[in-house]
Image (cartoon, rainbow, N blue to C red; front, side):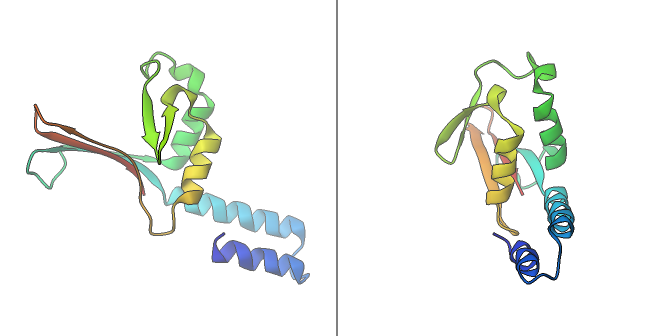
Length: 131
């Protein structure tokens, strides 16, 4: 639990905030933390520090996309899975709640690596992460 969240809950316990006021503050706190997080994809040529492909998607956009995921059926290969901290998850089963959990698990300065792939044949390195 973040320090800001603890402070808000303590203020409710002390009677300094109503539950409704706390709810608004907690919502704003959640929105601001999501706005600062992005889903990143980087593709590097062998030996290069500068990515040749750079994709940055705000977490909020991913949550909206996952809510309307049925509209994207067929775009994501069926059965494609990623390993997230030892748990294999099919991308077509990804939910907004999973995204919330990942964002919640990331510390303020943290980075959540979803995948790192090296293509030895082409000499490319791909990294996918949330930060």
